[in-house]
Image (cartoon, rainbow, N blue to C red):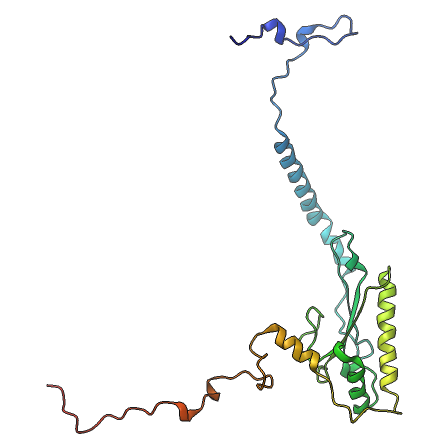
Length: 236
């Protein structure tokens, strides 16, 4: 048979070493506290209230640091992109990527622009790269864009410095008029390979980047319209 605890056994006992303590004033632990999950929910609610107080009382103070937007000048055509993981350590956090429209770079002539595209190789694209911060409809993209990235050094500033120096060397070499490479055609194999890999309809050879539509359907293949005969008997 199961044992029953007597009232004397369940009563709290006075700690050892304390003289003259009345055991009747010591309350028995009846287990009325919440569970561990309840404490976790309370902690989450406290954290939410903490950030709500910050939004209510501290966010309005940021108005003092507000600055009007100033569009970038032609002397600063570079767009620098970085990656952040919200404070968590990640190897990609030191990577820096620079994107710039070719038409806004200090190239002296059209021959220098052509040579610059040849030297850039697969880093040149006619459209702005994804996540570059440049819209397709922005002005200055008539000669395409160049993208240079670096993540070989341990510090972000070192990677940005290397990418910036590489762009400066490309510009200096493109402006060198000793050999313009005017007889060398522009290599677009990297663009064609990217299009074939996407397989969105433009990868079929012979289309030249233009998808066929109903307007391209040969009219001579259409069936001849049926003409109603005037001598056909009318329905009774």
